[in-house]
Image (cartoon, rainbow, N blue to C red):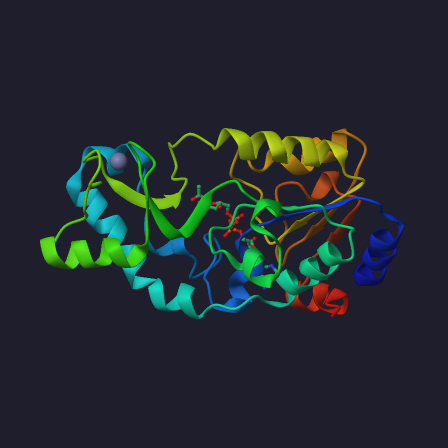
Length: 246
Ligand code: OAD
Ligand code: ZN
């Protein structure tokens, strides 16, 4: 089966780079974006330009984030996260490239510097002007006191979750590190992503072009199934469960 073949490919590989999307965290209770019931099937994304320009967009963005707080706070790593952490501890995975913002790779045992977050992290906030970091409960308190999304105490620019919105610049260092890893691995595994959001979706192809084997694990077909060496259309927890070690 596909999972057996994946086991052989993992055994044969020297450097494995996993690339994850929202599908790896759905079993942890966090909705993805494009499945039925996904975030973008319910709400239109608030683009970075709107966030910068309009207080109302900032308020709405923070209301949405606060509404998700219980979900994010309760989420624990799933079987996919734990399988990747096992391969990391075994020395097969130097780092994980993720589009996710939920901090669950860190929670599963990856050191922070080995989680390359292309789209940032939603578990803290940052000033879009000076970069000052704020805890979410600071934002919540200020929002409740003022009835509106707060600005930075240092420079008075808006404070935003430390995530990358549509229309916002990609983080330079993360893009460079993801590029180098994609080119250096011999097995690249795309897990739980529809592979439609660029530039992130360019990494599987980059790895393939540089000579790596490409595996895609996703419940539904993706944009890039046709270039993969192995496609596993299966539940991620089921597909990666056998690789959860100790
Ligand atoms: P998507 O919602 O586009 O894709 C998630 C994929 O995971 C879907 O194809 C699902 O079928 C699949 N899936 C969900 N649960 C699964 C499970 N348990 N087992 C197997 N497959 C499962 O999410 P991403 O590709 O991560 O960016 O989205 C990419 C980017 O779009 C996000 O990082 C975010 C979003 O807009 C920004 O906001 C900048
Ligand atoms: Zn500031």
